[in-house]
Amino acid sequence: MLDAPSSLSESRYWECIAACSRCALLCDFCAASCLRDAHAEHMLQCVALATECADVCRVAASTMARDSAHVSAVCELCARICESCAAECENHDAEHCQDCAESCRHCAQLCRELIS
Image (cartoon, rainbow, N blue to C red; front, side):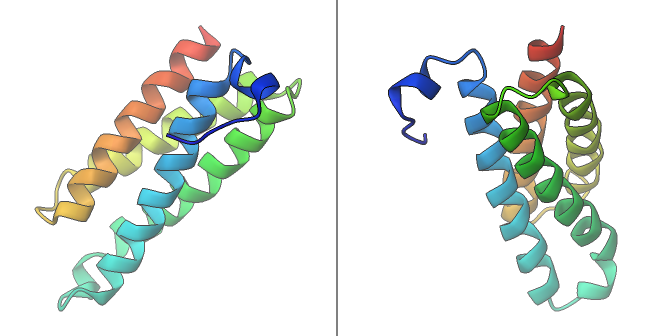
């Protein structure tokens, strides 16, 4: 887990920020790994969703770190995209896809808990 400055680690957002940051990294790794696959042409939807998910996870983490007035809207979008990415990655046997799916499900869960 990421170490946070004490003021941020005490934030109600910290656990979700860490999950979003981890998810973004695993999505980036998944997309890059899929592109290196011998049958990359069959992984294009996975690459697209993982890339999109990584981007929105980074935006969500930054939005929470700033305690933006838009946290709820951004976290709702993040949860939706994470769920879509997880559903796609679960269709593939590659370990990086399975790791990405697990991270996406966890991130989506924490985002939904945060906004509920």
